[in-house]
Amino acid sequence: MTTGIVGLGLIGGSLAKAIKEKNPHKVLGFDISESSFLEAKLVGAVDERLDDSNLSSCDFVIIAVYPSAAVNYIKENAARFKKGAIVVDCCGIKRGICAEIMPIASENGFYFIGGHPMAGTQAWGFRYSRGSLFNKASVLLTPPDGIDINILERAKSFFSRLGFAEVVFTTPGEHDRIIAYTSQLPHAVSSAYIKSPAAAEHKGFSAGSYKDMSRVAKLNEDMWCELFLENSDYLAEEIDSLIEKLSEYRNAVKSGDALALRKLLEEGRIRKESIEKSRGTGASQK
Image 1 (cartoon, one colour):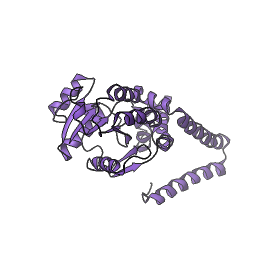
Image 2: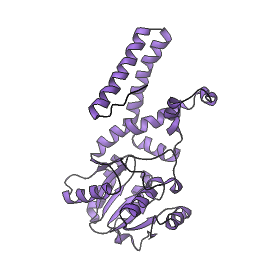
Image 3: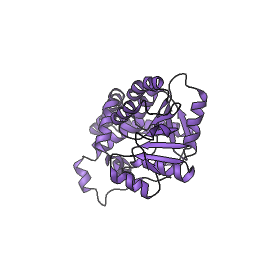
Image 4: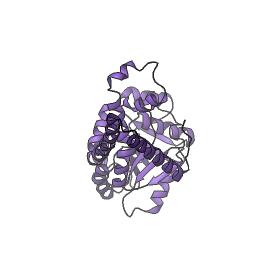
């Protein structure tokens, strides 16, 4: 099987490495950065350059670039994809991409499935990619309605062989709604949190809590700005909800209301324990 990968950054580069390490298929790669492509070629993550002349040879194509670039690439190359090929993007939002691309895929005879590997680091670029990045992670897939079950099985098998522990099928809307909470809100909160004047004075006064809260403030602002704005309705709802809840804590602290504050903290603990119990992930907190 031949796989084409567009974008050889952290995700695309890690996928290329995982394919070569676990399923020695032919990998064609493309990146707008010539140095990233050459590095990928040098370490054996890709076999050849992906271009107009060989895109049609790919059975599986992964688009690992920003949302707008992903849409543009697929539109510009719609007629070049192999008939029956599976094309999957790796963007952190799904509604806009799927709405634009699914009709184009149907018209041109290839299958488009929205995708989102739930793995990453605060660093980006091919130099930080690794084939083990997806081990025990999940990947979210948003296929079109009525797609052939055999295509879904092919997609599931492809990602499972790369180390993903779980392949979750969902809808674009459900993906964007939940991702606003689990991914986008934490990045927004971390970015705001690190702007406190106290952040510059934390040395010697911080441990795990500071590291956990501040880790994803080190982000790619170009990519996250695009993701936030493409999912602005759901993300704004989550930010509003958080502000409302934080206001309750602030009011209890400012008024010295120990009973109210204790109740808020207790509710948070119980909520966390309930979620862990339902998922069988109950780890004790010290």
